[in-house]
Length: 343
Ligand SMILES: NCCCCCC(=O)NO
Ligand SMILES: [Zn+2]
Image 1 (cartoon, helix red, strand yellow):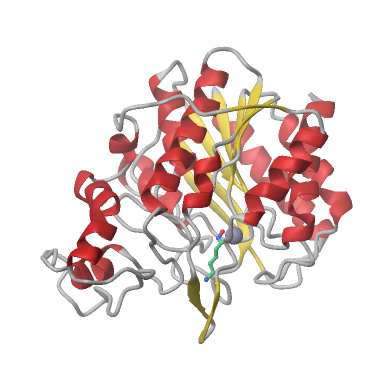
Image 2: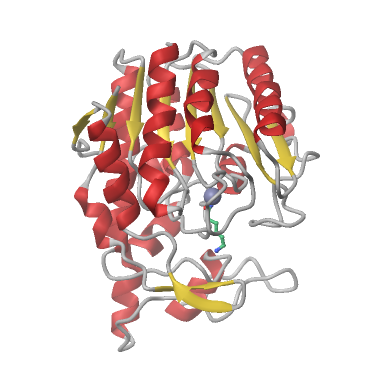
């Protein structure tokens, strides 16, 4: 399996995030990618840089004004004399108008962002674009005939919606990869999200579409971020009705329940009979993850890879979460080698 990696990820070093009422150093830190890179190279994966792409595919899943905002936000911040990390001061919440985009940068931050944990810094856009290019390159490798490929995406993407960002995510790398596959030979694609957190952004993007199914196994939003999406009754709408499947699980879920639920998710995917699958690969389901609450052990990650292999589909792995930095590389590499050994 080839892996796609860009050192530009390090341009996004977010500073601080507001997490459970405290301003703390960002959990989504550059060292995550360093540890993953070291582990996948030690596991024998060939690593290559991303190819350059236009914004064509990105703009099929994200709103153009939103992408322009991400690209220009820090310049607007500097224009008002600021140079530190950017966090919103207010949000377009339930009772607020949703039809106005404030002209000022502080208003725009609250229009597009939905949490206080996803800072933008000067190099964020460079990293975000490179991350999307990693996902596009992995998708292109699979569209061109590779059985599988892995995109070491940082920042992650599955919380980024068509015109929203949060959860450490800015552009939705998995959705961009799925769209690329749709545009290059796959009539039906599924995004299977095994990150601890619900892939609300991916669900949002494909909510009304029947050509890309979203399936997510995650910590229940009753207690876990993103709180306001990820319930089992969310099934899609319009042409997308029935092409969205959520499998929320309680805090403390261990391998037996997780494994049985993943099998249920895989069965739904088999019924859909897709031409390819994109895996939103978060490894924050790990027992030692600092912000999550499942109890999977390191020995379970090769088994997750092997289960995904039973689909027998062209597979694009896209890195999402995982914050137990010392073990993240081993856990990611073990999913990928578990997949390869079962293929
Ligand atoms: N600061 C709130 C928690 C963000 C979750 C990020 C993540 O791992 N999503 O998959
Ligand atoms: Zn996560």
